[in-house]
Length: 156
Ligand SMILES: Nc1nc2c(c(=O)[nH]1)N[C@H]1C(S)=C(S)[C@@H](COP(=O)(O)O)O[C@H]1N2
Ligand SMILES: [Mo]
Image (cartoon, rainbow, N blue to C red; front, side):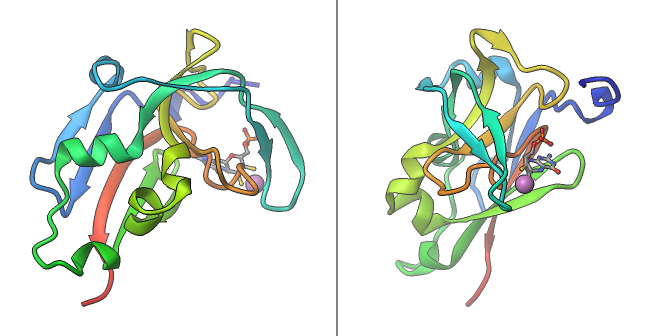
């Protein structure tokens, strides 16, 4: 089932937009940040269809990566208007709000991961992916072939 997906495999993750230190990370760089272990999590499509389970994942919190890159928020109320867009090499995109990541229980479960059951991710989602484990349906914000995180202020 992995055949044909080689072209989507993401080797790097770019952190861009409203941040002080735009950075590009590879799996080696991610391994240097605080590591998170995620237990086997059910994957459910937006339709409700059962897509199986994730297996045991290793990665880092999206929150920790954003803190490292340093989000630019000049005014006290800026962060409340900021969103974070996660993009994959096939053009798939999902959105988080800053408040969701930093001021709600959801943030503790949003993980950029690069290992499943101790092994590098396969071509069908590799090498870098993301999941929001606290979502009711986890399929939509499971981003395969993640290659960009962008911080955007959406309203003034
Ligand atoms: N990059 C990327 N990630 C994605 C998708 C996609 O089209 N592209 N589809 C999402 C949806 S809607 C679901 S249910 C799961 C499905 O994963 P599968 O295609 O491996 O079954 O991946 C999610 N992640
Ligand atoms: Mo889905």
